[in-house]
Image 1 (cartoon, each protein chain N blue to C red):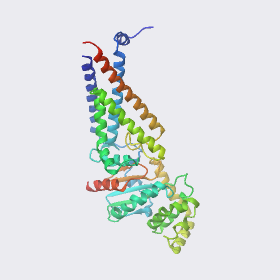
Image 2 (cartoon, rainbow over the protein chains, first blue to last red; image 1 turned 120 degrees about the horizontal axis):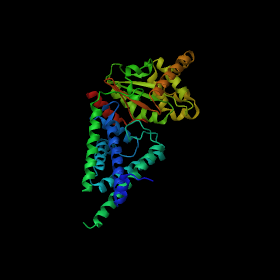
Image 3 (tube, each protein chain N blue to C red; image 1 turned 30 degrees about the vertical axis):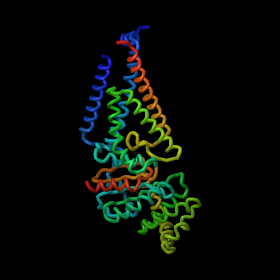
Image 4 (spheres, rainbow over the protein chains, first blue to last red; image 1 turned 180 degrees about the horizontal axis):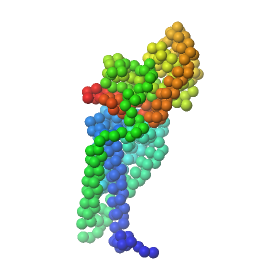
Length: 168
Length: 225
């Protein structure tokens, strides 16, 4: 069977394939986070830079989990935080930290969603704008993202460890 | 060397995404056909103004798709909507439209909606709506709606509503169906579903009801525009 030059190149260089997978993983995750931020700021045919937080605060509040001041604060911050995380993941800057924070954030989201499902709350997810109802599919999707985030984080730590162990 | 190359790829991708997002923002604003927020209020107001409160000329219009037997609707009515009526509808700032969206899972929701529609045609919507939500716990278990709301609606008034309902049952059912069809067309899949229209632009609020403080902030923002 013929092997493409790119694959041969990857297989010749130890660590090249995991490195490429890590790039693929973090870029995919970064794009998803950028899209999540974008969907919170741009909806109903326009940018909502001055009023995005009103509707997002309502979505967060529907989880009936946090006091109102925290809800409002989160509604202000979260889209920009997701934007920053997405950008950092794509750029590969501080990947061990970025990956860890992304994993922790996704874990918190999944926890909140699971709680809402257990309580039987018929609410919207609030993940990518306001129109997605919270359901099992949402939980499966976010769990898959968590697996990806953990893989990126672990990969970043392993690559760092390998580099530290390799004599220059 | 390798990590520098990776960072370059990352930065290139980031710049490309930012550029793509800017491109989207530069496009003229369009709305998705058939989406909940796509329809201006003039196109959705229908002919059921008897179920509306406030002035039609108010700068903000709120439409609420409700089911009288739904606990979330009762909660939204009692914790938010009453205050909206008091502070915004009665002061001419908000025009509040009730839309019937009785859910199949609630056996007495249509019966309650018929009663409310008859009351609306007789100018008694606000009283009956309040009574229905305030006594939901009682009538939702046995369907004895008139008995439950009797303390709030005098017997003579109730008789008028009952007689009117019997005489106009087809129109009343048609009105409920019109509201329901409008909801289905706008992808309403839960109650309460709330739409806020200001300056010809309609936003769908997150389903399931909204805290009054958050709704107030949003309404104040819209009124400041």
